[in-house]
Structures are given as structure tokens and as C-alpha cells.
Length: 204
Image (cartoon, rainbow, N blue to C red; front, top):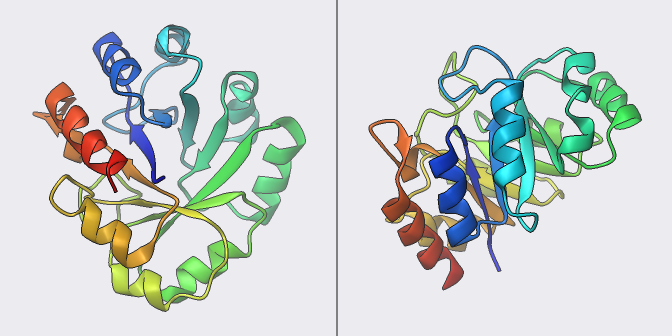
């Protein structure tokens, strides 16, 4: 079964919605400076309300390791979405027992292959948009993914919506899909869109 991650939880309403429609993972943006960033206080409140069967993913971008590890006992997965290298991942491993995912923007096959060599548990393959680390809503280049030589399981991110998810999953065979802007209306999570796409994915 294709896994579902919904990223960018910000409000109590978002948590009520995901508790109802049951994605496998939800993501919280915990580095500063992004549209969906939330405070540690907000994270604590939202995660407290989240059903225990849904995995919590903390998304970090070039975060100081010490800052990231403040969340270590409250997360199931750490998702690294910046320029983190092998040394950084080693430091995270020393203080975090959950999974580590490394996001890579699919500009070339070499980018994916380089990330695959890191000591991470899974990859998250996102679209490449110059100057952006993610959350653009742009679709990833699936042909680059097909040409790349890599072995890790991966989540597919970048512009996945109810119209293209079946084709994308069939073409590149990800472990799961990562959804954010495609399940929003006017910048906020939309229950109807979440319900629709999770229903489609559960039938794949």
C-alpha cells in the first residue's frame, strides 16, 4: 500500500482532519523562516492532539544539530531538507533513535545518487526549483528519478495531486507520497482535498 504523508500542519483543525482521514505520517516545519513554520509551543500542542497511530515527522532545513535534538523524543522521523551531509547525519543519529529521511531536489540523477549514499533511512525526492528548498507545488521530473541508480525507498514530493498521483505512483513506484500545497485552499489545509486524495491513494 502506498504511504501518505501530509506536511505543513499548523492548526488544530489540521490535526482534527488528519485524525479523521488517517495519513500514515504528518509533517511539522520546525525550522524558522518558512510559510508553514510553527513554534515549538504550537508543535507540542498539535502533536499532543494527534492520534498516536500517525507518525510525526519534523522537517528541518540546515538546523543546528543541538536545536533539532530538542525535539528528539517527540518525533518518529527527522526529515532533513537542506544541505545536510554525512557528518551532520552522524551527529543526529547520536541523539535520535527514529528514522532519518534526506530530501533531495531532483535536478539530476547524480543528485539522487549522491543522497542515496548517505546514512539515511529513506529519501524524499522533491522537484527542483532554483533557490527553493521545497514546498513549491511544482511537479518533480519523474524521468530523472527513473534514470537514477539508487536503492533506498523514497517518498515522492512536489505537486502531487488527485489528478496525477496514480500516474506518478505507477511510473516511479515510490514507497509513499508527500502532500502539502495540493491539499490546501488559499494557503490552508482543505478537508475535502485531503479526503479526496487519500481516498484515491488507498485504492491504488
